[in-house]
Image (cartoon, rainbow, N blue to C red; front, side):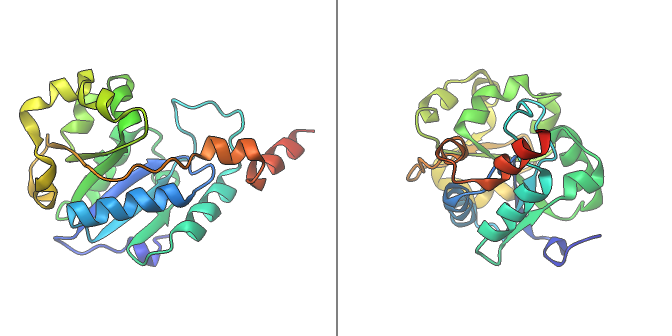
Length: 210
């Protein structure tokens, strides 16, 4: 069932931020608002992943808990926490992007990813198809920002890389197109939240296995 916040009209600029959201936290909100501002997006969808293929299921809270966490944290009417990947039956980014661009050919999607993920991009399934499906904006992450700019993925897209000040133009570019955003880095981490025991979702998962 399509959620109200997922209704799109032609010409909208929509950022797509995939992740486990295990749990969602203020850092997600920080980077999303950075992207909304820098890229002049109309909306951002938080694509809560049923299971990230590059992450272990160990310590992963139930999907319902992670979606609820993202929905509660999305304290901005422009942000939509969605289970669309589960409804589409897609597990990999390339398949999600292909399905969304086919469904909404008149919407200007932008893929949002952290500098840490940019370093890992060549490990993603059919990554060269990913960069051909939507422009990509890379937001800074502590300890990864410079390495991302020097990564093999960045080198492959050097000729298609915009200046940081041209963020408002990115959504209008036909892919491949890449931009590295500049701004304050959030040090919040879902891993640290789980380590402190502040996230009951993983505790419920552990209890269910006893």
